[in-house]
Image 1 (cartoon, rainbow, N blue to C red):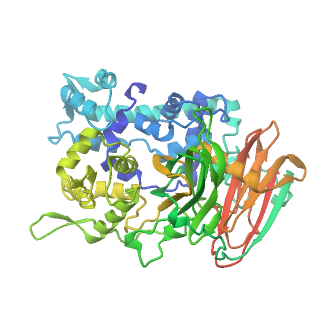
Image 2 (image 1 turned 60 degrees about the vertical axis):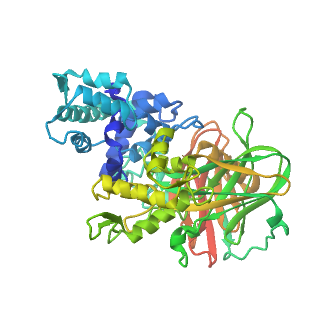
Image 3 (image 1 turned 90 degrees about the horizontal axis):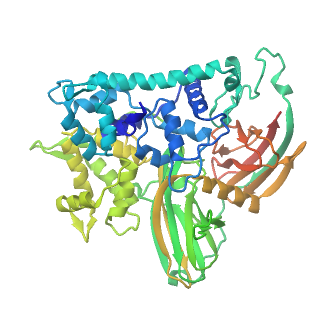
Length: 619
Protein backbone atom coordinates (compact mmCIF):
# COMPACT_ATOMS: atom_id res chain seq x y z
CA UNK A 1 0.00 0.00 0.00
CA UNK A 2 2.75 2.43 -0.95
CA UNK A 3 0.12 4.82 -2.28
CA UNK A 4 -0.93 5.53 1.32
CA UNK A 5 2.40 7.18 2.12
CA UNK A 6 1.73 9.83 4.75
CA UNK A 7 -1.73 8.62 5.73
CA UNK A 8 -0.72 6.75 8.85
CA UNK A 9 0.55 9.83 10.60
CA UNK A 10 -2.42 11.87 9.53
CA UNK A 11 -4.66 9.34 11.26
CA UNK A 12 -2.63 8.20 14.20
CA UNK A 13 0.26 10.43 15.12
CA UNK A 14 -1.86 13.02 16.87
CA UNK A 15 -0.97 13.42 20.51
CA UNK A 16 -3.66 11.08 21.77
CA UNK A 17 -1.90 8.27 19.90
CA UNK A 18 1.61 9.36 20.76
CA UNK A 19 1.18 8.59 24.44
CA UNK A 20 0.92 4.90 23.64
CA UNK A 21 4.00 5.06 21.45
CA UNK A 22 5.95 6.76 24.23
CA UNK A 23 5.44 3.83 26.60
CA UNK A 24 8.61 1.94 25.77
CA UNK A 25 9.13 -1.65 26.75
CA UNK A 26 11.95 -4.08 26.43
CA UNK A 27 11.55 -6.91 23.95
CA UNK A 28 11.49 -10.42 25.35
CA UNK A 29 14.12 -12.79 23.88
CA UNK A 30 11.64 -14.54 21.58
CA UNK A 31 10.12 -11.23 20.46
CA UNK A 32 13.60 -9.78 19.98
CA UNK A 33 14.62 -12.67 17.72
CA UNK A 34 11.46 -12.20 15.66
CA UNK A 35 12.00 -8.43 15.51
CA UNK A 36 15.53 -8.68 14.13
CA UNK A 37 14.52 -11.42 11.72
CA UNK A 38 11.85 -9.17 10.21
CA UNK A 39 14.26 -6.20 10.12
CA UNK A 40 16.91 -8.27 8.40
CA UNK A 41 14.42 -9.61 5.89
CA UNK A 42 13.09 -6.16 5.04
CA UNK A 43 16.60 -4.78 4.58
CA UNK A 44 17.52 -7.52 2.12
CA UNK A 45 14.52 -6.79 -0.09
CA UNK A 46 16.13 -3.42 -0.87
CA UNK A 47 19.87 -4.06 -0.46
CA UNK A 48 22.19 -6.90 -1.37
CA UNK A 49 23.97 -6.82 1.97
CA UNK A 50 23.52 -5.35 5.42
CA UNK A 51 26.81 -3.56 4.90
CA UNK A 52 25.12 -1.44 2.22
CA UNK A 53 23.98 1.89 3.61
CA UNK A 54 20.77 3.85 3.09
CA UNK A 55 21.83 6.83 0.99
CA UNK A 56 18.69 8.94 0.60
CA UNK A 57 15.26 9.57 2.12
CA UNK A 58 13.48 7.58 -0.62
CA UNK A 59 15.50 4.46 0.24
CA UNK A 60 14.68 4.95 3.93
CA UNK A 61 10.99 5.21 3.07
CA UNK A 62 11.10 2.07 0.91
CA UNK A 63 12.92 -0.12 3.40
CA UNK A 64 10.58 1.00 6.22
CA UNK A 65 7.60 0.12 4.04
CA UNK A 66 9.09 -3.33 3.46
CA UNK A 67 9.26 -3.67 7.25
CA UNK A 68 5.49 -3.13 7.46
CA UNK A 69 5.59 0.61 8.21
CA UNK A 70 3.98 3.47 6.33
CA UNK A 71 6.20 6.43 7.29
CA UNK A 72 5.03 9.99 6.87
CA UNK A 73 7.23 12.77 5.55
CA UNK A 74 7.46 14.10 9.09
CA UNK A 75 8.73 10.76 10.39
CA UNK A 76 11.25 10.47 7.57
CA UNK A 77 12.48 14.01 8.14
CA UNK A 78 13.06 13.26 11.81
CA UNK A 79 15.73 10.71 10.87
CA UNK A 80 16.88 12.07 7.53
CA UNK A 81 17.82 15.69 8.14
CA UNK A 82 19.55 18.14 5.83
CA UNK A 83 22.89 16.99 7.24
CA UNK A 84 22.26 13.24 6.90
CA UNK A 85 24.36 11.54 4.26
CA UNK A 86 23.74 7.88 5.07
CA UNK A 87 22.23 5.49 7.62
CA UNK A 88 23.41 1.95 8.28
CA UNK A 89 21.57 -1.24 9.16
CA UNK A 90 21.82 -0.64 12.91
CA UNK A 91 20.30 2.82 12.43
CA UNK A 92 17.45 1.20 10.50
CA UNK A 93 16.78 -1.29 13.35
CA UNK A 94 16.73 1.56 15.86
CA UNK A 95 14.22 3.49 13.76
CA UNK A 96 11.94 0.47 13.35
CA UNK A 97 12.06 -0.14 17.09
CA UNK A 98 11.29 3.51 17.91
CA UNK A 99 8.59 4.06 15.30
CA UNK A 100 5.96 1.52 16.18
CA UNK A 101 3.53 1.02 13.25
CA UNK A 102 0.01 2.22 13.82
CA UNK A 103 -2.03 -0.59 15.38
CA UNK A 104 -5.45 -1.35 13.92
CA UNK A 105 -7.13 -0.41 17.21
CA UNK A 106 -5.27 2.91 17.18
CA UNK A 107 -6.44 3.70 13.66
CA UNK A 108 -10.01 2.74 14.49
CA UNK A 109 -9.99 4.98 17.53
CA UNK A 110 -8.71 7.86 15.39
CA UNK A 111 -11.46 7.36 12.81
CA UNK A 112 -14.18 7.01 15.41
CA UNK A 113 -13.32 10.43 16.75
CA UNK A 114 -14.34 11.68 13.30
CA UNK A 115 -17.53 9.60 13.42
CA UNK A 116 -19.32 10.53 16.68
CA UNK A 117 -22.55 8.90 15.45
CA UNK A 118 -20.64 5.61 15.03
CA UNK A 119 -22.00 5.05 11.50
CA UNK A 120 -18.90 3.12 10.43
CA UNK A 121 -18.15 5.33 7.45
CA UNK A 122 -16.94 8.82 6.49
CA UNK A 123 -18.18 10.72 3.47
CA UNK A 124 -15.54 11.27 0.80
CA UNK A 125 -16.05 15.03 0.92
CA UNK A 126 -15.51 15.14 4.69
CA UNK A 127 -12.50 12.78 4.48
CA UNK A 128 -10.88 14.96 1.80
CA UNK A 129 -11.48 18.16 3.76
CA UNK A 130 -10.06 16.78 7.02
CA UNK A 131 -6.96 15.09 5.66
CA UNK A 132 -5.92 17.84 3.26
CA UNK A 133 -6.27 20.67 5.79
CA UNK A 134 -5.39 19.29 9.24
CA UNK A 135 -2.25 17.96 10.88
CA UNK A 136 0.33 16.70 8.41
CA UNK A 137 -1.68 17.43 5.30
CA UNK A 138 -2.07 14.71 2.69
CA UNK A 139 -1.78 15.57 -0.97
CA UNK A 140 -4.87 15.32 -3.22
CA UNK A 141 -3.15 12.40 -4.97
CA UNK A 142 -2.74 10.50 -1.69
CA UNK A 143 -6.37 11.09 -0.73
CA UNK A 144 -7.52 10.05 -4.19
CA UNK A 145 -5.51 6.83 -3.96
CA UNK A 146 -7.34 5.87 -0.75
CA UNK A 147 -10.76 6.78 -2.10
CA UNK A 148 -10.15 4.68 -5.22
CA UNK A 149 -9.68 1.48 -3.20
CA UNK A 150 -12.66 -0.56 -4.37
CA UNK A 151 -12.86 -2.86 -1.35
CA UNK A 152 -13.37 -0.06 1.16
CA UNK A 153 -15.33 2.56 -0.81
CA UNK A 154 -18.89 2.69 -2.16
CA UNK A 155 -21.48 5.40 -2.66
CA UNK A 156 -19.01 8.20 -1.92
CA UNK A 157 -18.37 6.68 1.49
CA UNK A 158 -15.18 5.28 3.02
CA UNK A 159 -15.85 2.23 5.20
CA UNK A 160 -13.08 2.95 7.68
CA UNK A 161 -13.46 -0.39 9.49
CA UNK A 162 -12.70 -2.25 6.24
CA UNK A 163 -9.94 0.25 5.50
CA UNK A 164 -8.27 -0.41 8.88
CA UNK A 165 -8.52 -4.16 8.31
CA UNK A 166 -7.00 -3.80 4.84
CA UNK A 167 -4.24 -1.51 6.07
CA UNK A 168 -3.30 -3.82 8.95
CA UNK A 169 -3.31 -6.98 6.83
CA UNK A 170 -1.24 -5.28 4.11
CA UNK A 171 1.44 -4.24 6.63
CA UNK A 172 1.54 -7.77 8.04
CA UNK A 173 1.74 -9.19 4.53
CA UNK A 174 4.71 -6.96 3.64
CA UNK A 175 6.64 -8.23 6.65
CA UNK A 176 5.66 -11.85 6.06
CA UNK A 177 6.64 -11.78 2.38
CA UNK A 178 10.04 -10.26 3.19
CA UNK A 179 10.77 -12.98 5.78
CA UNK A 180 9.62 -15.75 3.42
CA UNK A 181 11.85 -14.37 0.66
CA UNK A 182 14.84 -14.34 2.99
CA UNK A 183 14.13 -17.83 4.33
CA UNK A 184 14.10 -19.10 0.75
CA UNK A 185 17.47 -17.50 0.07
CA UNK A 186 20.03 -19.43 2.07
CA UNK A 187 22.80 -17.06 1.09
CA UNK A 188 20.91 -14.09 2.48
CA UNK A 189 20.03 -15.98 5.63
CA UNK A 190 23.71 -16.68 6.34
CA UNK A 191 24.76 -13.05 6.05
CA UNK A 192 26.06 -11.06 8.99
CA UNK A 193 23.91 -8.01 9.58
CA UNK A 194 25.29 -4.72 10.81
CA UNK A 195 26.69 -5.33 14.25
CA UNK A 196 25.02 -8.73 14.47
CA UNK A 197 26.66 -12.10 14.08
CA UNK A 198 24.53 -14.99 12.91
CA UNK A 199 24.46 -17.79 15.48
CA UNK A 200 22.43 -20.86 16.10
CA UNK A 201 19.19 -20.44 18.08
CA UNK A 202 20.79 -22.20 21.04
CA UNK A 203 23.63 -19.66 21.05
CA UNK A 204 21.75 -16.56 20.01
CA UNK A 205 23.13 -13.22 21.13
CA UNK A 206 21.65 -9.78 21.45
CA UNK A 207 21.81 -8.43 17.91
CA UNK A 208 21.87 -4.74 18.70
CA UNK A 209 25.34 -3.20 19.03
CA UNK A 210 26.68 -6.76 19.26
CA UNK A 211 26.16 -6.87 22.99
CA UNK A 212 27.04 -10.51 23.53
CA UNK A 213 25.70 -12.39 26.50
CA UNK A 214 28.27 -12.62 29.26
CA UNK A 215 27.84 -16.37 29.45
CA UNK A 216 29.14 -16.96 25.93
CA UNK A 217 30.43 -14.30 23.60
CA UNK A 218 31.77 -16.43 20.77
CA UNK A 219 30.05 -16.70 17.38
CA UNK A 220 29.81 -20.41 16.60
CA UNK A 221 29.29 -22.30 13.38
CA UNK A 222 28.50 -25.48 15.28
CA UNK A 223 26.28 -25.08 18.30
CA UNK A 224 27.11 -28.60 19.42
CA UNK A 225 30.80 -27.87 19.87
CA UNK A 226 32.07 -28.91 23.30
CA UNK A 227 35.00 -26.51 23.17
CA UNK A 228 35.19 -24.59 26.47
CA UNK A 229 34.61 -20.82 26.38
CA UNK A 230 38.06 -20.20 27.87
CA UNK A 231 39.62 -21.57 24.68
CA UNK A 232 38.26 -18.90 22.35
CA UNK A 233 40.36 -17.80 19.38
CA UNK A 234 41.42 -14.18 19.02
CA UNK A 235 43.44 -12.71 16.18
CA UNK A 236 44.83 -9.98 18.39
CA UNK A 237 44.33 -8.18 21.68
CA UNK A 238 45.23 -4.95 23.48
CA UNK A 239 44.85 -4.27 27.19
CA UNK A 240 44.59 -0.79 28.74
CA UNK A 241 44.78 -0.13 32.48
CA UNK A 242 44.29 3.36 33.93
CA UNK A 243 44.02 4.18 37.64
CA UNK A 244 41.83 7.23 38.25
CA UNK A 245 41.51 9.13 41.51
CA UNK A 246 38.51 10.94 42.97
CA UNK A 247 37.35 14.05 41.16
CA UNK A 248 39.27 17.00 42.55
CA UNK A 249 38.61 20.72 42.49
CA UNK A 250 40.20 22.04 39.32
CA UNK A 251 43.07 24.51 39.52
CA UNK A 252 41.98 26.01 36.22
CA UNK A 253 41.90 29.79 36.39
CA UNK A 254 39.37 31.89 34.54
CA UNK A 255 40.68 35.00 32.77
CA UNK A 256 40.82 37.67 35.48
CA UNK A 257 38.79 40.14 33.38
CA UNK A 258 36.30 37.55 32.06
CA UNK A 259 33.27 39.48 33.31
CA UNK A 260 34.31 42.39 31.08
CA UNK A 261 34.28 40.26 27.91
CA UNK A 262 31.22 40.37 25.63
CA UNK A 263 29.13 37.27 26.40
CA UNK A 264 26.17 35.42 24.94
CA UNK A 265 24.19 32.63 26.60
CA UNK A 266 21.81 29.98 25.36
CA UNK A 267 19.98 27.12 26.97
CA UNK A 268 19.33 23.72 25.47
CA UNK A 269 18.55 20.15 26.42
CA UNK A 270 19.61 16.55 25.91
CA UNK A 271 16.63 14.23 25.37
CA UNK A 272 16.99 10.48 25.78
CA UNK A 273 15.30 8.24 23.20
CA UNK A 274 15.52 4.57 22.15
CA UNK A 275 17.57 5.61 19.13
CA UNK A 276 20.05 7.69 21.10
CA UNK A 277 20.37 11.18 22.54
CA UNK A 278 18.88 14.25 20.86
CA UNK A 279 20.04 17.80 21.56
CA UNK A 280 20.03 21.34 20.23
CA UNK A 281 22.83 22.31 17.83
CA UNK A 282 24.12 25.87 17.54
CA UNK A 283 25.81 28.35 15.23
CA UNK A 284 28.39 30.75 16.68
CA UNK A 285 29.46 33.82 14.74
CA UNK A 286 32.51 36.02 15.41
CA UNK A 287 33.20 39.23 13.53
CA UNK A 288 36.94 39.22 14.27
CA UNK A 289 39.68 36.98 15.63
CA UNK A 290 39.43 36.70 19.40
CA UNK A 291 40.30 34.69 22.46
CA UNK A 292 37.17 32.73 23.33
CA UNK A 293 36.09 31.14 26.60
CA UNK A 294 33.35 28.49 26.33
CA UNK A 295 31.45 26.77 29.13
CA UNK A 296 28.62 24.23 29.25
CA UNK A 297 26.94 22.85 32.35
CA UNK A 298 23.63 21.26 33.43
CA UNK A 299 20.90 23.81 34.12
CA UNK A 300 19.39 23.86 37.61
CA UNK A 301 15.67 24.47 37.29
CA UNK A 302 13.59 26.42 39.79
CA UNK A 303 11.57 23.37 40.86
CA UNK A 304 14.78 21.54 41.82
CA UNK A 305 16.38 24.31 43.89
CA UNK A 306 17.60 23.00 47.23
CA UNK A 307 17.73 19.47 45.83
CA UNK A 308 20.28 17.47 43.86
CA UNK A 309 18.34 16.28 40.80
CA UNK A 310 19.66 13.38 38.73
CA UNK A 311 20.44 15.42 35.65
CA UNK A 312 22.87 17.71 37.51
CA UNK A 313 25.39 14.84 37.61
CA UNK A 314 25.21 14.31 33.83
CA UNK A 315 28.48 14.99 32.02
CA UNK A 316 28.41 17.61 29.28
CA UNK A 317 30.81 18.74 26.57
CA UNK A 318 30.77 21.16 23.67
CA UNK A 319 32.52 20.41 20.36
CA UNK A 320 33.61 23.35 18.21
CA UNK A 321 33.71 22.98 14.42
CA UNK A 322 34.71 25.63 11.86
CA UNK A 323 32.14 25.90 9.08
CA UNK A 324 33.56 25.51 5.59
CA UNK A 325 31.35 27.79 3.44
CA UNK A 326 29.50 24.84 1.94
CA UNK A 327 32.63 22.98 0.92
CA UNK A 328 32.32 19.71 2.83
CA UNK A 329 31.82 19.05 6.52
CA UNK A 330 32.78 21.58 9.20
CA UNK A 331 36.31 21.03 10.51
CA UNK A 332 37.03 20.00 14.11
CA UNK A 333 38.66 22.74 16.20
CA UNK A 334 38.49 21.66 19.85
CA UNK A 335 36.16 20.81 22.72
CA UNK A 336 35.55 21.60 26.39
CA UNK A 337 37.99 19.30 28.20
CA UNK A 338 38.48 20.90 31.60
CA UNK A 339 36.05 20.52 34.50
CA UNK A 340 35.75 23.68 36.57
CA UNK A 341 33.09 24.59 39.15
CA UNK A 342 30.54 22.20 37.68
CA UNK A 343 31.14 23.42 34.11
CA UNK A 344 33.18 21.97 31.24
CA UNK A 345 35.31 24.72 29.74
CA UNK A 346 37.64 25.56 26.83
CA UNK A 347 39.77 28.61 26.15
CA UNK A 348 41.45 29.31 22.84
CA UNK A 349 41.83 31.52 19.79
CA UNK A 350 39.13 31.52 17.11
CA UNK A 351 39.33 33.43 13.85
CA UNK A 352 36.44 35.45 12.45
CA UNK A 353 33.68 33.38 10.87
CA UNK A 354 30.93 30.89 11.62
CA UNK A 355 31.26 27.84 13.86
CA UNK A 356 29.04 24.86 14.61
CA UNK A 357 28.72 24.02 18.31
CA UNK A 358 27.55 20.48 19.08
CA UNK A 359 26.69 19.61 22.70
CA UNK A 360 27.60 16.10 23.76
CA UNK A 361 27.04 13.75 26.68
CA UNK A 362 28.46 10.25 26.93
CA UNK A 363 25.23 8.54 27.98
CA UNK A 364 26.93 7.08 31.05
CA UNK A 365 24.65 9.01 33.39
CA UNK A 366 21.76 10.01 31.14
CA UNK A 367 20.18 6.57 30.99
CA UNK A 368 16.79 4.90 30.95
CA UNK A 369 15.32 4.96 34.44
CA UNK A 370 14.29 1.40 35.26
CA UNK A 371 12.70 2.32 38.57
CA UNK A 372 8.93 1.83 38.24
CA UNK A 373 6.62 4.70 39.12
CA UNK A 374 4.35 3.56 41.94
CA UNK A 375 1.92 6.50 41.87
CA UNK A 376 0.93 8.60 38.87
CA UNK A 377 0.85 12.33 39.51
CA UNK A 378 -2.43 14.16 39.05
CA UNK A 379 -2.36 16.88 36.37
CA UNK A 380 -5.84 18.42 36.47
CA UNK A 381 -8.85 18.69 38.78
CA UNK A 382 -12.26 20.39 38.89
CA UNK A 383 -12.83 23.18 41.38
CA UNK A 384 -16.02 23.97 43.27
CA UNK A 385 -17.53 25.51 40.14
CA UNK A 386 -16.68 22.39 38.14
CA UNK A 387 -14.13 24.38 36.14
CA UNK A 388 -10.99 22.51 35.11
CA UNK A 389 -7.75 23.62 36.82
CA UNK A 390 -4.10 22.55 36.67
CA UNK A 391 -2.68 21.03 39.84
CA UNK A 392 0.15 22.86 41.60
CA UNK A 393 2.54 19.98 40.83
CA UNK A 394 1.73 20.16 37.13
CA UNK A 395 2.08 23.96 37.11
CA UNK A 396 5.50 23.60 38.69
CA UNK A 397 6.58 21.07 36.06
CA UNK A 398 5.21 23.26 33.26
CA UNK A 399 7.16 26.20 34.66
CA UNK A 400 10.35 24.13 34.40
CA UNK A 401 9.43 23.10 30.85
CA UNK A 402 9.01 26.79 30.05
CA UNK A 403 12.51 27.48 31.41
CA UNK A 404 13.97 24.64 29.31
CA UNK A 405 12.49 25.90 26.04
CA UNK A 406 13.15 29.58 26.82
CA UNK A 407 16.54 29.30 25.10
CA UNK A 408 17.60 32.92 25.52
CA UNK A 409 16.39 33.02 29.12
CA UNK A 410 14.46 36.29 28.71
CA UNK A 411 11.30 34.94 30.38
CA UNK A 412 9.26 34.78 27.14
CA UNK A 413 8.87 32.32 24.26
CA UNK A 414 9.47 33.48 20.72
CA UNK A 415 7.91 31.58 17.81
CA UNK A 416 11.30 30.03 17.09
CA UNK A 417 11.70 28.83 20.69
CA UNK A 418 8.11 27.56 20.81
CA UNK A 419 8.64 25.63 17.58
CA UNK A 420 11.54 23.68 19.08
CA UNK A 421 9.06 22.65 21.78
CA UNK A 422 6.38 21.79 19.21
CA UNK A 423 8.83 19.70 17.15
CA UNK A 424 9.80 17.83 20.28
CA UNK A 425 6.28 17.25 21.62
CA UNK A 426 4.20 16.82 18.45
CA UNK A 427 6.63 16.69 15.53
CA UNK A 428 4.98 19.69 13.86
CA UNK A 429 5.83 23.38 13.68
CA UNK A 430 3.46 26.23 14.47
CA UNK A 431 3.14 28.44 11.38
CA UNK A 432 2.72 32.22 11.38
CA UNK A 433 -1.08 32.03 11.13
CA UNK A 434 -1.35 29.65 14.09
CA UNK A 435 1.05 31.83 16.09
CA UNK A 436 -1.16 34.85 15.37
CA UNK A 437 -4.16 32.92 16.72
CA UNK A 438 -2.09 32.00 19.78
CA UNK A 439 -1.29 35.67 20.38
CA UNK A 440 -4.97 36.57 20.14
CA UNK A 441 -6.01 33.99 22.76
CA UNK A 442 -3.11 33.85 25.21
CA UNK A 443 -1.03 36.44 27.01
CA UNK A 444 1.94 37.70 25.01
CA UNK A 445 4.40 40.58 25.23
CA UNK A 446 6.21 41.94 22.18
CA UNK A 447 4.97 38.98 20.11
CA UNK A 448 6.36 36.45 22.61
CA UNK A 449 4.35 34.06 24.78
CA UNK A 450 4.48 34.71 28.52
CA UNK A 451 4.73 32.05 31.21
CA UNK A 452 1.06 32.61 32.06
CA UNK A 453 0.13 32.31 28.39
CA UNK A 454 1.98 29.00 28.22
CA UNK A 455 0.09 27.74 31.30
CA UNK A 456 -3.25 28.84 29.85
CA UNK A 457 -2.45 27.12 26.56
CA UNK A 458 -1.99 23.81 28.40
CA UNK A 459 -5.19 24.40 30.37
CA UNK A 460 -7.02 24.92 27.09
CA UNK A 461 -5.63 21.61 25.83
CA UNK A 462 -6.95 19.90 28.97
CA UNK A 463 -10.37 21.51 28.43
CA UNK A 464 -10.39 20.42 24.79
CA UNK A 465 -10.10 16.84 26.00
CA UNK A 466 -12.66 17.38 28.81
CA UNK A 467 -10.09 16.70 31.50
CA UNK A 468 -8.48 13.67 29.86
CA UNK A 469 -4.74 14.18 30.62
CA UNK A 470 -3.48 11.88 27.84
CA UNK A 471 -2.25 14.69 25.58
CA UNK A 472 -0.63 16.46 28.52
CA UNK A 473 1.27 13.31 29.43
CA UNK A 474 2.51 12.98 25.86
CA UNK A 475 3.98 16.47 26.11
CA UNK A 476 5.56 15.78 29.50
CA UNK A 477 7.05 12.45 28.46
CA UNK A 478 8.45 13.93 25.27
CA UNK A 479 10.23 16.45 27.50
CA UNK A 480 11.75 13.68 29.65
CA UNK A 481 9.28 13.46 32.55
CA UNK A 482 7.95 10.24 34.04
CA UNK A 483 4.47 9.67 35.46
CA UNK A 484 5.61 10.97 38.86
CA UNK A 485 6.53 14.32 37.23
CA UNK A 486 10.24 13.63 37.71
CA UNK A 487 12.67 14.75 34.99
CA UNK A 488 14.49 11.45 34.41
CA UNK A 489 15.15 11.20 30.66
CA UNK A 490 16.42 14.68 29.82
CA UNK A 491 19.21 17.00 30.89
CA UNK A 492 18.76 20.75 30.37
CA UNK A 493 22.00 22.68 29.98
CA UNK A 494 23.29 26.21 29.52
CA UNK A 495 26.09 27.41 27.25
CA UNK A 496 28.11 30.60 27.80
CA UNK A 497 30.38 32.05 25.12
CA UNK A 498 32.78 34.85 26.06
CA UNK A 499 34.88 36.59 23.38
CA UNK A 500 37.57 39.06 24.39
CA UNK A 501 37.60 41.19 21.21
CA UNK A 502 34.39 40.34 19.39
CA UNK A 503 30.72 40.41 20.30
CA UNK A 504 29.67 36.77 19.77
CA UNK A 505 26.32 35.73 18.31
CA UNK A 506 24.90 32.34 19.27
CA UNK A 507 21.76 30.74 17.83
CA UNK A 508 20.12 27.34 18.18
CA UNK A 509 19.67 26.06 14.62
CA UNK A 510 18.37 22.50 15.03
CA UNK A 511 17.22 19.79 17.41
CA UNK A 512 18.59 16.48 16.22
CA UNK A 513 20.14 13.15 17.26
CA UNK A 514 23.85 12.45 17.52
CA UNK A 515 24.96 12.73 13.93
CA UNK A 516 27.55 11.04 11.78
CA UNK A 517 29.47 14.29 12.01
CA UNK A 518 29.58 14.14 15.82
CA UNK A 519 30.83 10.54 15.74
CA UNK A 520 33.50 11.57 13.26
CA UNK A 521 34.56 14.47 15.47
CA UNK A 522 34.62 12.27 18.58
CA UNK A 523 36.94 9.83 16.83
CA UNK A 524 39.21 12.61 15.58
CA UNK A 525 39.48 14.23 19.01
CA UNK A 526 40.43 10.94 20.66
CA UNK A 527 43.00 10.12 17.96
CA UNK A 528 44.55 13.60 18.29
CA UNK A 529 44.65 13.71 22.08
CA UNK A 530 44.67 10.07 23.16
CA UNK A 531 47.29 7.33 23.43
CA UNK A 532 47.59 4.84 20.56
CA UNK A 533 48.15 1.11 21.08
CA UNK A 534 48.33 -1.31 18.10
CA UNK A 535 46.89 -4.74 18.85
CA UNK A 536 49.37 -7.52 19.51
CA UNK A 537 49.01 -9.97 16.66
CA UNK A 538 46.83 -7.63 14.58
CA UNK A 539 48.63 -4.35 13.98
CA UNK A 540 46.04 -3.18 11.46
CA UNK A 541 43.77 -2.50 14.45
CA UNK A 542 44.75 0.38 16.74
CA UNK A 543 43.10 1.30 20.05
CA UNK A 544 43.16 4.98 20.99
CA UNK A 545 42.39 5.91 24.60
CA UNK A 546 41.69 9.44 25.77
CA UNK A 547 41.18 10.52 29.39
CA UNK A 548 40.37 13.72 31.23
CA UNK A 549 39.35 14.36 34.83
CA UNK A 550 35.89 12.82 34.44
CA UNK A 551 35.80 10.31 31.57
CA UNK A 552 37.75 7.88 29.43
CA UNK A 553 36.88 7.35 25.76
CA UNK A 554 38.30 4.64 23.49
CA UNK A 555 38.24 4.53 19.70
CA UNK A 556 39.00 1.59 17.40
CA UNK A 557 40.74 2.21 14.09
CA UNK A 558 40.65 -0.53 11.45
CA UNK A 559 43.37 0.10 8.84
CA UNK A 560 42.75 -3.16 6.99
CA UNK A 561 40.66 -3.78 3.89
CA UNK A 562 38.32 -6.10 5.79
CA UNK A 563 35.62 -5.63 8.39
CA UNK A 564 36.68 -6.49 11.96
CA UNK A 565 34.57 -7.59 14.92
CA UNK A 566 36.13 -6.42 18.19
CA UNK A 567 35.11 -7.70 21.61
CA UNK A 568 35.40 -5.29 24.55
CA UNK A 569 35.79 -6.70 28.07
CA UNK A 570 35.51 -4.43 31.13
CA UNK A 571 35.16 -7.19 33.71
CA UNK A 572 38.28 -6.14 35.63
CA UNK A 573 37.25 -2.48 35.87
CA UNK A 574 36.11 -1.15 39.23
CA UNK A 575 33.69 1.64 40.18
CA UNK A 576 33.02 2.22 36.47
CA UNK A 577 30.04 2.61 34.20
CA UNK A 578 30.22 2.21 30.42
CA UNK A 579 28.09 4.09 27.90
CA UNK A 580 27.38 0.68 26.33
CA UNK A 581 25.59 -0.49 29.47
CA UNK A 582 27.43 -3.84 29.62
CA UNK A 583 30.82 -5.03 30.80
CA UNK A 584 31.16 -7.41 27.85
CA UNK A 585 30.05 -6.58 24.30
CA UNK A 586 31.37 -6.33 20.75
CA UNK A 587 31.34 -3.78 17.95
CA UNK A 588 31.75 -4.11 14.20
CA UNK A 589 34.43 -1.90 12.62
CA UNK A 590 34.15 -1.57 8.83
CA UNK A 591 37.29 -1.57 6.68
CA UNK A 592 39.36 1.63 6.67
CA UNK A 593 37.26 3.27 9.38
CA UNK A 594 37.16 4.38 13.00
CA UNK A 595 34.44 3.63 15.57
CA UNK A 596 33.87 4.86 19.13
CA UNK A 597 34.29 1.82 21.34
CA UNK A 598 32.88 3.24 24.56
CA UNK A 599 32.86 6.07 27.07
CA UNK A 600 33.55 5.20 30.71
CA UNK A 601 32.98 7.22 33.89
CA UNK A 602 33.14 6.63 37.63
CA UNK A 603 30.01 5.37 39.32
CA UNK A 604 31.03 7.29 42.47
CA UNK A 605 33.33 10.15 41.47
CA UNK A 606 34.34 10.71 45.10
CA UNK A 607 36.19 7.36 45.10
CA UNK A 608 39.09 5.86 43.15
CA UNK A 609 38.16 4.00 39.99
CA UNK A 610 39.99 1.54 37.79
CA UNK A 611 39.63 1.33 34.01
CA UNK A 612 40.80 -2.10 32.87
CA UNK A 613 39.68 -2.79 29.31
CA UNK A 614 40.69 -5.58 26.92
CA UNK A 615 39.94 -5.16 23.20
CA UNK A 616 40.16 -8.41 21.21
CA UNK A 617 39.64 -9.05 17.51
CA UNK A 618 37.48 -12.13 17.09
CA UNK A 619 38.77 -14.63 14.58
